[in-house]
Length: 342
Image (tube, rainbow, N blue to C red; front, side, top):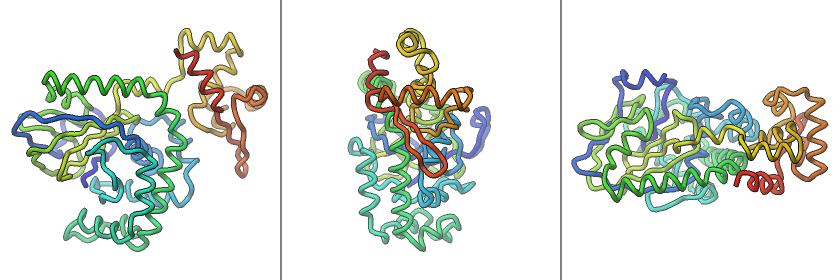
């Protein structure tokens, strides 16, 4: 598998870099789309845990990092190695080439994967080259690595699943956009506009990379996988024998990082007061009281008071974990917010 995880380029660097992966095409490509959220989770793992920053807001980065257990943090370290973009197939054992893949399916497959399969994938990924140092711990304890990575994936998804549910309208719009391009022609224009790190050249797609490579599309189809991720997050697989897949930030994803505004927020403020409305809207993922206070720029004592009122109304829950107090919206709160967003 060839996964593109970009170094810390500036957007202006992309047009000047001499390092590209090229996907050559001799005919108009056949497009399809997959709504597979596990690649969103992978992008967030890379950004929030492995240290490859791709534009994920700092609040989400901290929330995700704090929810992942130590073994998960250790398992994702190989993804942060500078100068490498190749990873073993075991990172994504179920690819989105034949339909949608849920996070739960991905986690179950990882946990059931024989340790020898990871060793084989590492050998295939790096060929005759010595195994890079950052992957050696995984090769020495493949069962531990698979379990740790599956756990990280589960922890990240538990934190970000509410955001994915909110993104359904954006995903539906993207399905329609890809469908129009596939039926009416013009897939080249669509592919060239997926992300600023992907361009459509004379011979096919050029993708900014840290390791140059060339692939022929042949008669394979291209599967597009929209993600909820930072604007610089792009993940691709160019060597799958059945299809190429390209995961990219879904257009409009940046609006999901912001709190609801306009009439909906005004009506919610009228119902419960502006501070509590802001608090409820800010909790898109579980977070600590100190994180919420910093994000809201409100005194901790005031945060505690308003959270107590929201707990009494069964709109948020509170849980102590060690020295930290974590709060999260309840299903009742999600339903209330959804009503005001309509």
